[in-house]
Image (tube, rainbow, N blue to C red):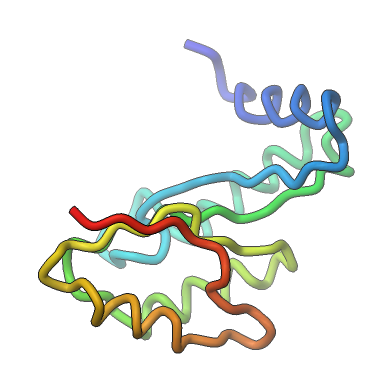
Length: 130
């Protein structure tokens, strides 16, 4: 086991190697499913703050990476609320993975592309169908 500060240590090492790179914390189920209480926007922010509090991590260039695996139709109200919560950090938000059940396909893509959250757009994502 690597311990409770493993993530912060890894971010510190990556920042030491190249302090100009934005370091994204990549997490899944943060915007997809409100029933998953272990992966909420508040817990995501809590983890970001834990990483920032680690010695010499106060100047990290961080970003929010959202793995998005949709096997059920998205709850748009929950997604908006989650993204608003994450956007309160002021960090860039990218969908780093977008995996959509083939039955939902284009419906979800069109919905995501239409969404605008203040100055935030879904502009960075990787896509594949299962």
